[in-house]
Length: 423
Image (cartoon, rainbow, N blue to C red; front, side, top):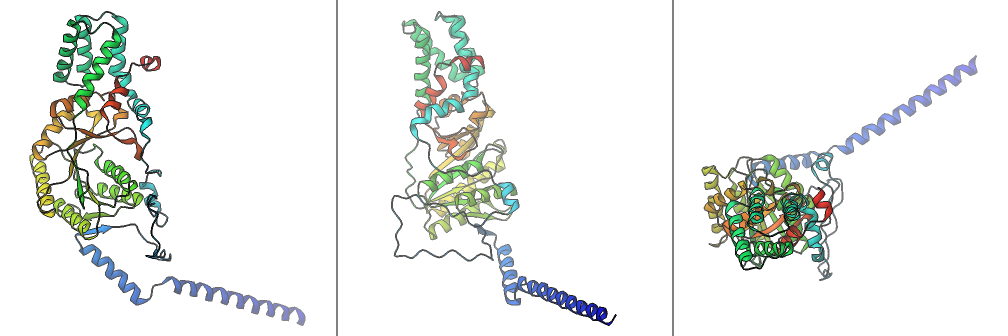
């Protein structure tokens, strides 16, 4: 009986010691997680300073628990032929993972694949009015006035536009009267030549060699401006340019967040302002930061706006004046108007209104892969003589491609195969 009591007492003592050690361990861990008073005060002060700054730089977040990466020594020069690889930084948070799209390789597509890629990207358009043209030839092999009238109807309904369609048909009639259109292939060849002539508008001479150069992006809501900025930044960064982004759309918080996600992906800082603030102030600050920190290029976003709203267009003029003030009198190197290809002929009116407010230097045509209205680009360029600079054929970075009139026309107006005709 005595032995049992001693064993019980010993077990109780051992259990008490174990519990005490566990409590002490948890208390010590809790203390290590707490910041010292001076560090907590500094953190609060930093947050207050950031909130008070109306225009600030958004950079990739740094995990306070992670040791900073060592600075490269000046004695080790970078290899001249190597392309800079962006630092991906710390792992993204769960919220950031939801915002970010799948990763990409910011490399330029090989030029020899351009026509094949364009054919795939223009599949909907080729299965639309191009297939209808081919079926016309199959039903009426003779090249006569009746066939030309049907061709004109197909072109007009394909959103090429009445004026452009009439000019193309006038040319076809002249060639037919001269006996130059003897077969179907002659008509396809003539259509391709006319399309190349329409689309071959040379861009203005702006090699973007001045530091900093500036590209201003404008367009209506939903055209794809912010995504276009991210893809352009990836292209220029891959080419070795030091790029700074300006979140000039201060009215839509989602636009700023989207641009910040792109900035993290391509390692480009983003200058942003307070929600609802002055877009001109954000662009001005971005230019000044670029001048101070030797950036090669600033790409500035603007708020999406209805082209019929005069006050919003006046605000764009103010941004343009601010740019000239910040750049010592010179205007933006490029002003790209982003157009949604799915809007068809409505895009022609958008070009007209934006050109009244700004010196638009080029067009970026997005969502070509999702519409049968790709022919609308002919009407836009023919009427306004503004060059197309880039076209969007998908969601990937490499799907934003530099526009080449000959490759585009070859892909669009090549005779459809059986699969296209059956679509």
